[in-house]
Length: 255
Figure 1 (tube, one colour):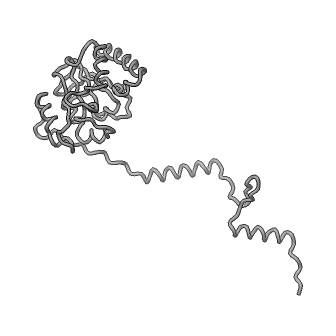
Figure 2: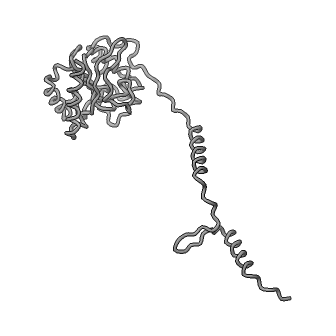
Figure 3: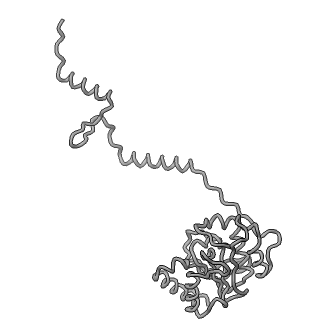
Protein backbone atom coordinates (compact mmCIF):
# COMPACT_ATOMS: atom_id res chain seq x y z
CA UNK A 1 0.00 0.00 0.00
CA UNK A 2 1.37 3.37 -0.99
CA UNK A 3 1.39 6.14 1.65
CA UNK A 4 0.92 9.74 0.56
CA UNK A 5 3.99 11.96 0.83
CA UNK A 6 4.01 14.11 4.02
CA UNK A 7 3.09 17.73 3.61
CA UNK A 8 5.62 20.53 3.76
CA UNK A 9 4.25 21.57 7.16
CA UNK A 10 4.63 18.05 8.53
CA UNK A 11 8.22 17.83 7.23
CA UNK A 12 9.04 21.19 8.79
CA UNK A 13 7.58 20.20 12.19
CA UNK A 14 9.44 16.90 12.09
CA UNK A 15 12.71 18.71 11.41
CA UNK A 16 12.09 21.08 14.28
CA UNK A 17 11.34 18.18 16.64
CA UNK A 18 14.53 16.43 15.57
CA UNK A 19 16.65 19.53 16.29
CA UNK A 20 14.93 19.93 19.67
CA UNK A 21 15.88 16.39 20.65
CA UNK A 22 19.42 17.05 19.46
CA UNK A 23 19.62 20.04 21.82
CA UNK A 24 20.21 22.59 19.09
CA UNK A 25 18.28 25.82 19.47
CA UNK A 26 20.34 28.23 17.34
CA UNK A 27 20.64 28.68 13.61
CA UNK A 28 24.36 29.26 13.07
CA UNK A 29 24.79 31.57 10.14
CA UNK A 30 26.71 34.83 9.99
CA UNK A 31 24.88 35.82 13.18
CA UNK A 32 23.43 33.50 15.81
CA UNK A 33 19.63 33.55 15.82
CA UNK A 34 17.65 32.21 18.74
CA UNK A 35 15.01 29.66 17.82
CA UNK A 36 13.95 27.96 20.99
CA UNK A 37 15.54 30.08 23.76
CA UNK A 38 13.59 31.29 26.74
CA UNK A 39 12.30 34.87 26.50
CA UNK A 40 14.52 37.62 27.93
CA UNK A 41 13.69 38.39 31.58
CA UNK A 42 12.27 41.78 32.37
CA UNK A 43 14.36 44.32 34.37
CA UNK A 44 12.08 43.68 37.33
CA UNK A 45 12.78 39.94 37.16
CA UNK A 46 16.53 40.53 36.95
CA UNK A 47 16.42 42.86 39.97
CA UNK A 48 14.43 40.31 41.95
CA UNK A 49 16.90 37.52 41.11
CA UNK A 50 19.90 39.68 42.10
CA UNK A 51 18.22 40.63 45.37
CA UNK A 52 17.42 37.01 46.18
CA UNK A 53 20.96 35.85 45.35
CA UNK A 54 22.52 38.62 47.45
CA UNK A 55 20.27 37.80 50.39
CA UNK A 56 21.20 34.13 50.16
CA UNK A 57 24.91 34.92 49.99
CA UNK A 58 24.73 37.19 53.02
CA UNK A 59 22.80 34.55 54.96
CA UNK A 60 25.54 31.98 54.25
CA UNK A 61 28.34 34.23 55.44
CA UNK A 62 29.57 33.79 58.99
CA UNK A 63 31.20 36.74 60.74
CA UNK A 64 34.92 36.25 61.30
CA UNK A 65 35.74 35.91 64.99
CA UNK A 66 37.62 38.87 66.48
CA UNK A 67 41.26 38.00 67.23
CA UNK A 68 41.90 37.25 70.87
CA UNK A 69 43.88 39.91 72.71
CA UNK A 70 47.04 38.55 74.31
CA UNK A 71 48.92 40.09 77.24
CA UNK A 72 52.66 39.88 76.64
CA UNK A 73 53.60 42.04 79.63
CA UNK A 74 52.97 39.30 82.17
CA UNK A 75 52.49 39.74 85.90
CA UNK A 76 55.41 42.12 86.45
CA UNK A 77 55.57 44.65 83.59
CA UNK A 78 58.57 47.00 83.39
CA UNK A 79 58.17 50.13 85.53
CA UNK A 80 60.71 52.42 83.85
CA UNK A 81 62.53 52.74 80.54
CA UNK A 82 65.65 50.96 81.78
CA UNK A 83 63.56 47.94 82.77
CA UNK A 84 61.66 48.22 79.49
CA UNK A 85 64.87 48.08 77.47
CA UNK A 86 65.95 44.93 79.32
CA UNK A 87 62.52 43.38 78.81
CA UNK A 88 62.43 44.31 75.10
CA UNK A 89 65.87 42.82 74.39
CA UNK A 90 65.68 39.67 76.50
CA UNK A 91 62.08 38.54 77.08
CA UNK A 92 61.86 35.19 75.22
CA UNK A 93 58.06 35.18 74.90
CA UNK A 94 57.74 38.24 72.67
CA UNK A 95 58.09 36.24 69.45
CA UNK A 96 59.03 32.84 68.10
CA UNK A 97 62.53 33.96 67.06
CA UNK A 98 63.64 34.90 70.54
CA UNK A 99 65.83 37.81 71.61
CA UNK A 100 68.32 37.54 68.75
CA UNK A 101 68.25 40.54 66.39
CA UNK A 102 66.05 42.86 68.42
CA UNK A 103 66.68 46.61 68.37
CA UNK A 104 65.96 48.81 71.38
CA UNK A 105 64.42 52.26 71.46
CA UNK A 106 66.62 55.33 71.93
CA UNK A 107 66.13 58.46 73.99
CA UNK A 108 65.03 59.70 77.37
CA UNK A 109 61.65 59.88 79.07
CA UNK A 110 59.50 63.01 78.76
CA UNK A 111 60.95 63.94 75.36
CA UNK A 112 59.29 66.72 73.39
CA UNK A 113 58.68 64.27 70.52
CA UNK A 114 58.40 60.50 70.23
CA UNK A 115 58.99 59.21 66.69
CA UNK A 116 57.39 55.83 66.23
CA UNK A 117 57.87 53.38 63.33
CA UNK A 118 56.51 49.88 62.75
CA UNK A 119 59.82 48.01 62.79
CA UNK A 120 63.57 48.53 62.58
CA UNK A 121 65.13 49.18 59.20
CA UNK A 122 66.49 46.16 57.34
CA UNK A 123 70.17 46.02 58.20
CA UNK A 124 69.89 47.68 61.62
CA UNK A 125 72.21 46.04 64.10
CA UNK A 126 72.78 48.12 67.24
CA UNK A 127 70.80 51.27 66.49
CA UNK A 128 67.26 51.88 65.28
CA UNK A 129 67.03 53.41 61.77
CA UNK A 130 70.75 53.42 61.09
CA UNK A 131 70.67 53.31 57.27
CA UNK A 132 68.87 55.19 54.46
CA UNK A 133 65.56 55.64 56.31
CA UNK A 134 67.51 56.93 59.29
CA UNK A 135 69.33 59.43 57.09
CA UNK A 136 65.99 60.78 55.89
CA UNK A 137 64.76 60.99 59.47
CA UNK A 138 67.89 62.94 60.44
CA UNK A 139 67.19 65.48 57.67
CA UNK A 140 63.56 65.78 58.77
CA UNK A 141 64.61 66.35 62.38
CA UNK A 142 67.14 68.97 61.32
CA UNK A 143 64.40 70.80 59.41
CA UNK A 144 62.28 70.66 62.59
CA UNK A 145 65.13 72.26 64.52
CA UNK A 146 66.01 69.18 66.58
CA UNK A 147 68.04 65.97 66.37
CA UNK A 148 68.03 62.40 67.62
CA UNK A 149 69.41 63.06 71.12
CA UNK A 150 66.39 65.28 71.74
CA UNK A 151 63.67 62.83 70.65
CA UNK A 152 62.52 59.39 71.75
CA UNK A 153 62.76 56.96 68.82
CA UNK A 154 60.97 53.61 69.06
CA UNK A 155 59.44 50.82 66.99
CA UNK A 156 56.25 48.84 67.54
CA UNK A 157 58.03 45.58 66.68
CA UNK A 158 61.42 44.49 68.05
CA UNK A 159 63.01 43.42 64.76
CA UNK A 160 62.70 44.08 61.03
CA UNK A 161 59.53 42.26 59.95
CA UNK A 162 58.86 42.42 56.19
CA UNK A 163 55.21 41.97 55.12
CA UNK A 164 54.12 42.06 58.76
CA UNK A 165 50.49 41.20 59.51
CA UNK A 166 50.06 44.22 61.75
CA UNK A 167 46.48 43.42 62.74
CA UNK A 168 47.45 39.94 63.93
CA UNK A 169 50.59 41.14 65.69
CA UNK A 170 48.74 43.97 67.41
CA UNK A 171 46.05 41.57 68.62
CA UNK A 172 48.80 39.11 69.56
CA UNK A 173 49.99 41.47 72.27
CA UNK A 174 52.03 44.20 70.61
CA UNK A 175 49.27 46.79 70.92
CA UNK A 176 49.41 46.38 74.69
CA UNK A 177 53.20 46.50 74.64
CA UNK A 178 53.24 49.75 72.69
CA UNK A 179 50.61 51.30 74.97
CA UNK A 180 52.76 50.48 78.00
CA UNK A 181 55.91 51.70 76.24
CA UNK A 182 54.29 55.07 75.48
CA UNK A 183 53.18 55.36 79.10
CA UNK A 184 56.75 54.80 80.30
CA UNK A 185 58.26 57.20 77.74
CA UNK A 186 55.72 59.94 78.49
CA UNK A 187 56.41 62.09 75.39
CA UNK A 188 54.70 65.44 74.84
CA UNK A 189 53.89 64.56 71.21
CA UNK A 190 53.93 61.42 69.07
CA UNK A 191 54.82 61.27 65.36
CA UNK A 192 53.86 57.81 64.03
CA UNK A 193 55.21 56.99 60.57
CA UNK A 194 53.39 54.48 58.36
CA UNK A 195 49.68 53.80 57.88
CA UNK A 196 50.20 50.17 58.94
CA UNK A 197 51.17 51.37 62.40
CA UNK A 198 47.53 52.18 63.20
CA UNK A 199 46.56 48.73 64.60
CA UNK A 200 49.33 49.05 67.21
CA UNK A 201 47.77 52.36 68.29
CA UNK A 202 44.33 50.82 68.62
CA UNK A 203 42.95 52.19 65.34
CA UNK A 204 41.71 50.55 62.17
CA UNK A 205 44.19 50.48 59.28
CA UNK A 206 41.50 51.83 56.92
CA UNK A 207 40.91 54.87 59.13
CA UNK A 208 41.84 58.28 57.75
CA UNK A 209 45.16 58.75 59.48
CA UNK A 210 45.15 62.47 58.68
CA UNK A 211 42.14 62.82 60.97
CA UNK A 212 43.82 61.25 64.01
CA UNK A 213 44.87 63.90 66.49
CA UNK A 214 45.62 62.17 69.78
CA UNK A 215 46.63 58.91 71.40
CA UNK A 216 44.46 58.10 74.41
CA UNK A 217 45.94 56.62 77.57
CA UNK A 218 44.23 55.38 80.70
CA UNK A 219 43.64 58.85 82.13
CA UNK A 220 45.01 61.32 79.56
CA UNK A 221 45.93 61.72 75.91
CA UNK A 222 48.97 62.76 73.88
CA UNK A 223 48.87 64.76 70.63
CA UNK A 224 49.39 62.33 67.74
CA UNK A 225 50.24 62.77 64.07
CA UNK A 226 50.23 59.75 61.75
CA UNK A 227 52.03 60.20 58.43
CA UNK A 228 53.51 58.23 55.54
CA UNK A 229 56.36 55.84 56.26
CA UNK A 230 59.95 56.92 55.77
CA UNK A 231 60.30 54.28 53.08
CA UNK A 232 57.38 55.76 51.13
CA UNK A 233 58.69 59.31 51.47
CA UNK A 234 62.18 58.35 50.31
CA UNK A 235 61.03 57.89 46.71
CA UNK A 236 58.40 60.61 46.54
CA UNK A 237 59.07 64.36 46.75
CA UNK A 238 55.30 64.86 46.70
CA UNK A 239 54.86 62.81 49.89
CA UNK A 240 57.72 64.70 51.55
CA UNK A 241 56.08 68.02 50.72
CA UNK A 242 52.70 66.82 51.97
CA UNK A 243 54.25 65.54 55.19
CA UNK A 244 55.95 68.87 55.81
CA UNK A 245 52.75 70.87 55.25
CA UNK A 246 50.88 68.62 57.67
CA UNK A 247 53.68 68.82 60.22
CA UNK A 248 53.65 72.64 60.17
CA UNK A 249 49.86 72.71 60.53
CA UNK A 250 49.89 70.10 63.31
CA UNK A 251 52.61 71.73 65.38
CA UNK A 252 50.93 75.12 64.99
CA UNK A 253 47.54 73.76 66.09
CA UNK A 254 48.89 71.71 69.00
CA UNK A 255 50.94 74.49 70.59
